[in-house]
Length: 201
Length: 201
Image (cartoon, rainbow over all chains, first blue to last red; front, side, top):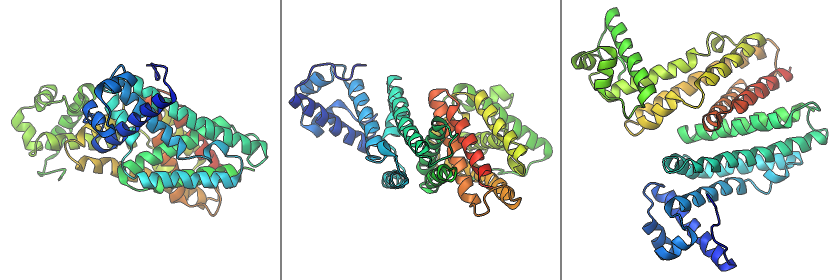
């Protein structure tokens, strides 16, 4: 599915973004299934024809854009640390940012809800989470490699494997949080993972 | 919800178990939503009145029993290793058993499907997964403590925290497997987790 089906001016891009953000807020409140295009028009003060100008394929295309927006937020909330894990101070700040994000989010996962409800609409939505996981893991892996190059970890450590393990721990910690309301597992996964990395030097 | 509402003879318990296993097979094939009591009666050659003798509260109670049965299987598939993680050989055998279980299961999670569909029916079903996670983590934690007592890990290691981190890694690895079909993350979580434990000695 093409994300930007029409060439947009700066003003057009801003309007499109405003519609996506308004739709995301509606979806967070009502859920993806219950959010209609009329709801989005009302919430964003947009006409139906304006909405179809930006999303010619309609509801499905808009929901896909909302999913991409929520996925981007997951990564953005971890910045500027996630993209620059080049010192243990940055790793600690990243750990705190991840915990703060999920503590605030609590037992609702906007992207998770959207995904559960969108897969009934389009399998293409699955791409969004797969891409999110890949980008997330890549950044963690880059950080592990940076620390190894500084001699701050075991020299024979496999950055991709450690990155995959850390991402798995975060995903599992978040899924247990969603189920139980407790942050313990996410915290343990980050702390045991990072201290394991540090201990190897 | 009481699990055994009536005192059962050995023969009664066997019949009840046969109904649960038959219902579990139906749910695995059709999904929880589509499985009717008539399906279960047909599949297990049981009459409606017999079924209500064992499950007086009806469908909801039967589905709860099916969820418990699937949760028990998750732990049983990891035995005899999970309950006796007292040597590195046992840890390695456990790791292999976990990977083999999920490799075979692939991208469908019978308990997950059941949970997603049951929470619409009864919040009590959530207890089943919470209890599963607790028992799972307790056994891993017991294993970590056993290794620490042998001096095979760092002496100051916190078994509960390491158990929580390992469980998070497994949960995340399984959820990524369900989404992508790849076992890489589960494998990395187990291998990095166990080698981190070993490296601390």
